[in-house]
Length: 275
Image: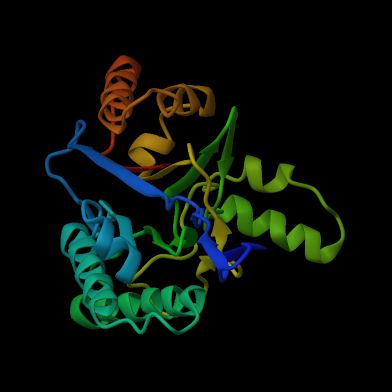
């Protein structure tokens, strides 16, 4: 941009170049934690790609995902690993010019198909996943894993759970009764109605529009061994600490403090946005 000054007597017009003020780009800090809880083996899997390379994030985006293998099935660990591998492979060849939200949704359907094909009904997994690209978040989930955004003093659950409780409540909305009590009181209220690997899988909860990110935003993707144990005040307070490493340490301490007899495997990924 040029500002043109007055013509000097006996000389040409002097062009003075003004400084160009470019808005700073967001950068990201990421950390994770994982524990076996009181279970015999770890069946959660996770991935985070391009978290530590600013250039790669700008060009290709940052991918994160937490997959919780279902312990009540024969191959929970293999199911979660298969889902993560499928998503990573899809991300490696993703066309960045296409609709990211649609791509993420289709990639999860592809991962579900891989789990079903390879395990033939003997394994299942949940997923909570997101892509950060061009300072926006695209996210999707299946099952009962959690995806949170902490912004300012607020904590926001971005996804819904695929369980009998929510299915019954949605049905009551369609019928016009608008009564959540029946689902809450159902004996199998927490039973999953959708998961990767099930036959007839047909529902991905996903963002339709990207969520613009801001400085100070903190994203948390976690299995129900975290989100189903800590209450939202505990999660918000943990995500209010300065560093992502301190956040992970606080979450670990809170899970230990709850000392649940049947503590599930727990996995969490944290991404903090900053300049």
